[in-house]
Image (cartoon, rainbow, N blue to C red):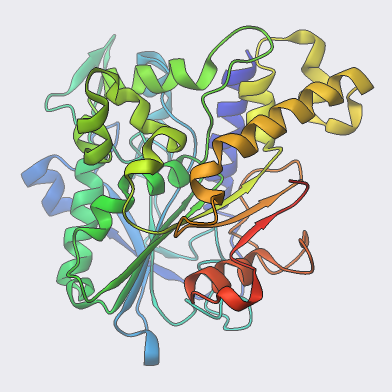
Length: 384
């Protein structure tokens, strides 16, 4: 179905990103969390240790840290998790000892000051995603599925990564940023306050979430695709402890809603930047028009939509801007870049087109991060 195909697409993109990195980007060193795997079962779906890549900061960035969470969809069933455990999105068995991160090379993880003026010389970290639940899984025991055994331990991987980075100096950070794309972008919303809580009050902490604002919408076929998927992840992977705790406490029996940024943001204390398309290509295929064959071509390519279909697309877009209100409200501390391109994830290459009012994605993040209110560039929306 459309959701499965979209998930496969996200997985392929994430896998290819590991091997198609820019040749000009300096390699990052891979750290396997072998001790944490043994002591806290901080393991991928297949039981191999969680892992991350890092590059030391220099000069003015020596005490500044950016942790980027890789994306790549979610597990959607026990068998889907088993299948995923045989790929780099569920196993660390094929991770290279040293390589460019493969995403963000021409964007948020670039070491080129012209491309990445705010973070280029920071301690840059790329967290491998191998748990299928946006780094939130928390099931104590292994799960047997047929002849396979899988592990839902994503939150423990994240904890182990943060602990390891703290031992490397992040505990003394003057500035720290949590970022991510797609499922990693969702993880950035989910874990933003938790990440901030690891630092003292003198540390400037911010979050940058790319393509992670998945809305709670009903598709034209009548399905609540993302809601059903998140409910499954929430229940199966026991993600409550890995979610925004203020939201969890406030929502009570409806705590699964806290996986949705639109419901969680009123409880978020840490400023966050939403980098998203208002016509996200994953959402049109896997959410808005999922299961509706009359929109098959339109969902994949908006130039193939009829006039009547385009009207429905625009209605979804308008609704999407409404659920972004916790971000876009002039009184919120949050920033945003919401463009009108039909794509998904934009922080990996962020100084080129598209532009909104001649402002690039990188410039918008910079204006927000530096609290430059004079430029009116920290909340940038195309076709509001």
